[in-house]
Amino acid sequence: MSKKCRAEYIWLDGTEPTSLMRSKTKVVDDGAELPLWGFDGSSTNQAPGNQSDCVLKPVYTVDDPIRGDGDKLVLCEVFDTEMKPHPTNTRALLRDVVDKYGHHDCWFGLEQEYTFMKPDGRPLGFPAGGYPHPQGPYYCGVGGSQIYGRDIVEHHFEACLEIGLGVSGINAEVMPGQWEFQIGPLGPLEASDQLTVARWLLCRIAEHYDCDATFEPKPAKGDWNGAGCHTNFSTKEMRESWEAIIAACEALSERSAEHVKYYGHGIEDRLTGHHETQRWDTFSYGVSDRGASIRVPWQVDRDRKGYIEDRRPNANCDPYHVTRLLVDTVCGALEKSKS
Ligand code: ADP
Ligand code: MN
Ligand code: MN
Ligand code: MN
Image (cartoon, rainbow, N blue to C red):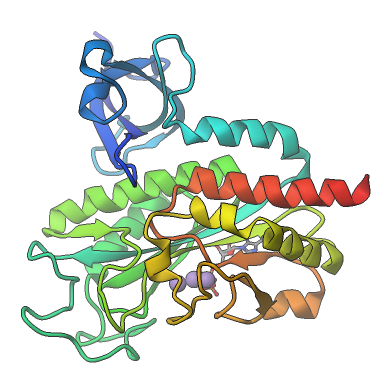
């Protein structure tokens, strides 16, 4: 009998206003091609009960670092039974834009911030009935009174590296219990797929620690930083010229409202103009400016080429929307300026 292994099929559901990750396990023959599979869309906000079948199509597979040898994590796109992309399938929209602008060789570095929540619903590090010491010592801190949840973070970091995800670093964030990992630089589909799998792994691993990892953009009200997903972006031209850097910033200023609409639910509560943000309804860009919508890193100013950081996306953003809009807006403008 051939060896069996477990394939964890992962997909994004239809929950409004922010989709949830779902997964279930299929036992498959070791080494065999991963088949299409289905699920009950009426339980995930993706179909009515009398026509409940939705189709899962594997698009990105990695080793499963939790279960073991031969087991897989399988990220899927969702289709209807006629094999049309489901309305919740935002990856399919990104594929179309990548087909159109692939020759610009876009790279993305996604800075995923997140917060650990305890079963009492408060962030890890927030004492019951009170508040921790104000923000200041926590960002990139060390020591038991600044750092909450490092065991979980290290566990997740190791799991990502073990299966070859392109994580480029981690750090403790400004609010206690808040952390960040970075994915990239990678192409738009690769960065978004890897971010999704890394998010799933984080939530899955946090289960072992009686903790919940949340991507809520403003997990603590008041004088506490929100959680974003700063999106570092470059095209081939931007990596070669300052003019293309400025052209990208100008193109983004033209379509700011449309971008912000797709950058994650609750963005008005996070982009307040305080806590290292620009207001959600205002657009600006500047060198080294963490109060701008777009920051041009100082090295990019020095080298006169490189990449820009879109500081607007929320931690709970859909990376397929964010990367699609950036590719579409910036590559569209770069091409128009040439024609
Ligand atoms: P910050 O200083 O804002 O905290 P980070 O170091 O957390 O920045 O993240 C920067 C991200 O930008 C990293 O993921 C890095 O891989 C990515 N990056 C570097 N160069 C480029 C580039 N040319 N295009 C896109 N992303 C890039
Ligand atoms: Mn960062
Ligand atoms: Mn950060
Ligand atoms: Mn950043």
